[in-house]
Length: 267
Image (cartoon, rainbow, N blue to C red; front, side, top):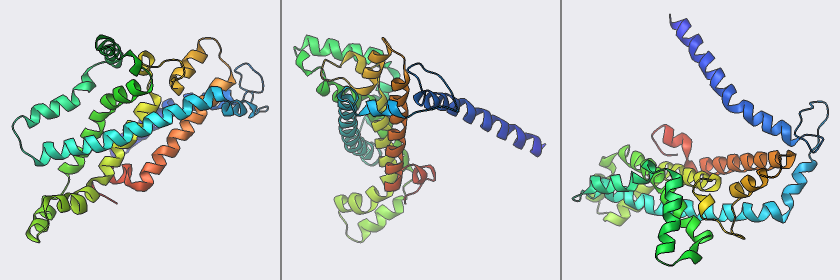
């Protein structure tokens, strides 16, 4: 019986990994197509399409997406950590309602949030904020719940005896938070910031309502390009984006992210 369960588990795992990786392999193969049409010829390939990625057409929206994602991850990391700290440690009246409010953006479709932001800016006469400012604000609202949830989980795994021991030794609240709590929950904070970065960098449903000429993110540029052309350049852009995201994840992990969070501790 155990062998059957083990065999079923490995079959399900292999099928899941195949389902996830096969489309990525197809995109990679398309980016190496020797012709301007999307074809797959294992015996004939080229990397010339990747040279087009160095053009202003792709570099400008890429750097804008990176800038917005960095700002969003930092802002959400700071605000999310502070909010999680006060919800868990400062037992004030309405803390549960406050936590529910922080997580409420998860229950609203991104398209609805995008329309709401545009209407709000129009009503208060701040249409000029459309573009980078609106993208940063909207992406922060979208990503903040993920950071809060990850940090709250880390704080829940924190050993409160360390806090009490530091208090007995004379450490004030700021010292206890800075030298004991923050190092312990760093994996959760960095994991949440990683989610915030990826969510912001790859966002389409929310960003499509907020971009403007000259302030167009990479995913929206890809969608606009896809309306008129489907060629290996498109595949190359997506492959480069995937590699970049993997590098970002690896960087956050080296700082103390996902693995430590999954094991409920800190590095």
